[in-house]
Image 1: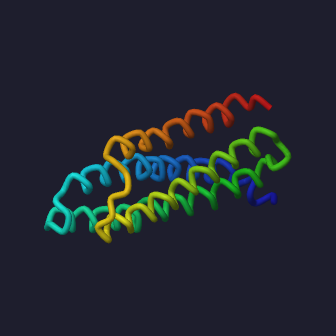
Image 2 (image 1 turned 90 degrees about the vertical axis):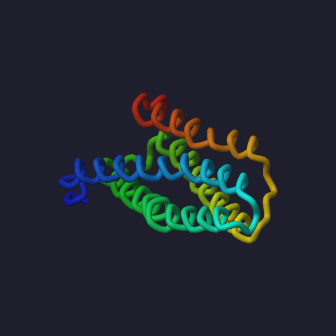
Length: 146
């Protein structure tokens, strides 16, 4: 664990960087879905959105989520935070965000098949989920209320 303590500033920096990338993707993908749903089903434009969504997931969103988790766990180990209540609460919200990520991936696959189960309005509302989670997570990490 001494090596983790030595690497702590780098682990923390990497964690924050990949959280930013992940959150950017979580904000972008539902917006892509809105535009995708506004395109004519089966059109060239709809197919371009399928490609854009897949690239966002494959190149940014999923790798950023994985690196956020890996670097976050290593950072928590480096400072011995696993006994802290604030970290348990933070992990709950990160698990929920990971579930939201999974739901977005599944919804994108439905859109690619031509299914459109949600309205653009509902997708716009769902776009607020990562922002609300970020507010709670940042307060937990900075303020450490418990």
